[in-house]
Length: 260
Figure (tube, helix red, strand yellow):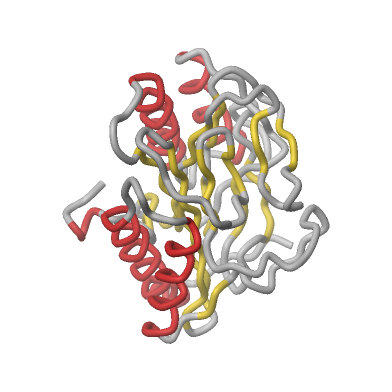
């Protein structure tokens, strides 16, 4: 069921959005060559406890997960792009890292993801990250009350195709509110003018993700981490966005921190 939020409820979601934005910025600043993925998870867990927040991931067990997730953040590296289960891995020079983080504060959820390179970057990785970020910006710009879900999907796909990337629609954006994943589903490809009309009060997480040379995924042996079928690298960008009469409001915007 698609739920619409009142202006007061959207305001009540702001603390969760701000905390998610702050945490991702902190973790990106602290993550470097030599950082262990389990240390990232421990740090995120500590920040959650200090804020009095609740993790949306630790007990999460959807049909596609082999077991409850058991960690508080997704850490996807290189050919992993989604649902990366933190494990005992120390980051190396040039690793492409995606962090996906969602929490609840006072019963309201916010969800966001970033991708970045530790150490010396490859040009193709920076290009891939740039594409996901521009696709997210295009999606947000399309999140207005005169559009439909298909307009968001088409905007994402146009950026990806212009840069030569294939698109997977198995996993994409989703409604956000009292729970992390709700209706509507927002695929990363679609037809403009189609789908559910975007209404004031709709809150959605928009999350373009692309792989360099394929649109096929395989599930890792951990039962969670999704990797490219051909070993090529992936990147992921996500924001929680409220649709209002005055335009889209990015609840997880990191701009107030002086970072992108």
